[in-house]
Image 1: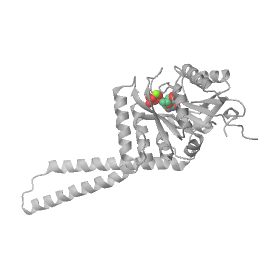
Image 2 (image 1 turned 45 degrees about the horizontal axis):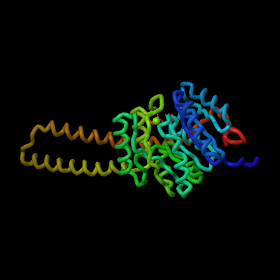
Image 3 (image 1 turned 30 degrees about the horizontal axis):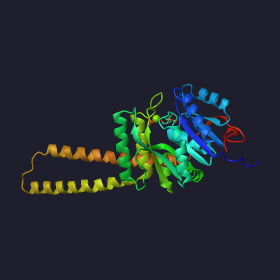
Image 4 (image 1 turned 135 degrees about the horizontal axis):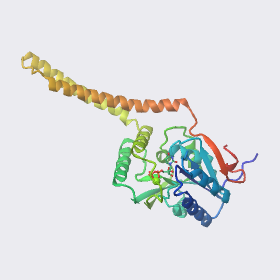
Length: 322
Ligand code: UDP
Ligand code: MG
């Protein structure tokens, strides 16, 4: 069977419990695709939603052959759901977007124009974040600065996964087998010409964030462990410092013993035990974080599991996974 021609553009959106925004999202994306012209597709991935997201998605797919609805076996998380969509989409250029309309699809023409001028990646960079709590904005700001310090990849600050990439960049991205994916970092790591498009990030159109604190922390740890071994090295540095302090204590207590001036010393003993014990647990935790990810990776399980694909025509993704 010959490969059908690729559409010029794919839009890929992971969706988890997005029944509140989905119809509006589809409407706005399709309006953008209509005015852009050319062959295109919208690939939406239902990441194991528990609401009516899948029904709404398949209903949309029934109305327009450019819409493809993909359902995963269960909730895989944002980055893997996105990976599923990126694996299945077929466009020459691919726009990654959240389904909650925080990233306006109407920016597509501007992104396309920048790509026409030779960019490999055009990423949306947030100037404002409306409707997000101070806490979310503050933790996000800290996160992007810490990651910048710890890694030698230039991961642009204040960006999400909202970006337009070329097929070339996408294929390179998909060739990376890692399980704990931090896609915006992986795209930055690829290099080429990456240009920002500054925009104002809107509030969610409906529904609520799927990134509560625990998930954000996990995401941050994934990002840091995927791009930096500095925390592993940190245990060495801290170990040296602790050893130096311990040695100073040792000398101090010997001198005290010689001078017969040792105090009962319970306080300092407890302080030292506490400090050392704490540090050891912390360092073991850091090693555990890397080891656990290494273990996950070594199992070599599929990154995502597809349950259904509905929609699409012309032997596109709708005809089944490649
Ligand atoms: N999402 C997903 N699976 C998940 C969590 C989120 O597919 O387990 C999708 C979600 O539907 C949205 C995007 O990932 O399209 C970003 O999630 P969200 O808007 O909740 O994150 P935030 O913008 O609050 O960081
Ligand atoms: Mg959002």
